[in-house]
Length: 158
Image 1 (tube, rainbow, N blue to C red):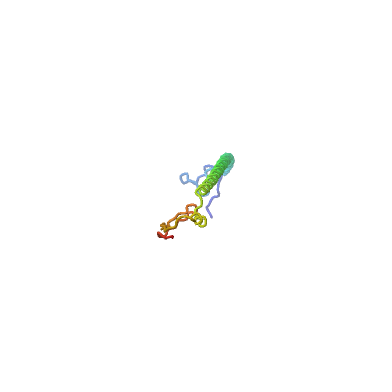
Image 2 (cartoon, rainbow, N blue to C red; image 1 turned 120 degrees about the vertical axis):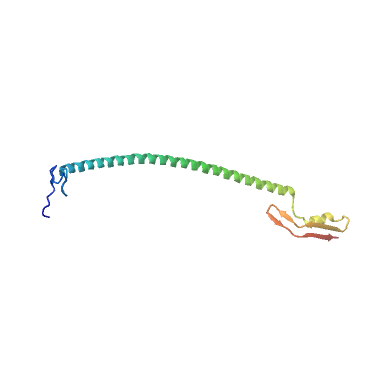
């Protein structure tokens, strides 16, 4: 450590080698560096305050926009639910009307099965003979949605 000079705060102290400073020496006094550091601190604190204020102001604006969007969304959702309820009501009414119509048609058509006792009663006292009844057992009961198919059948009655 011999031969090393301490850090000097004097401006322009040179080592005699063409204007270069020794290692550890500053070209400006330490007080100037401290003053620069103090001003940099003040500027950075001011920028922090400005940045924080901007964040608060912009955050409030964003919050207001999100609140408005949420309110609008809730209004639209309520309107959609109302429309859905009306559509469901109309659907239920249409299903009820269809069910009533199908029942009316079924009643107007009369019974779909032969009342055997009534049929035989109507035939009493009438001339007797031989009859062949042919039918295809393909039938569709559209009321219940059943569809069946079998072979053609014939019978003879005397």
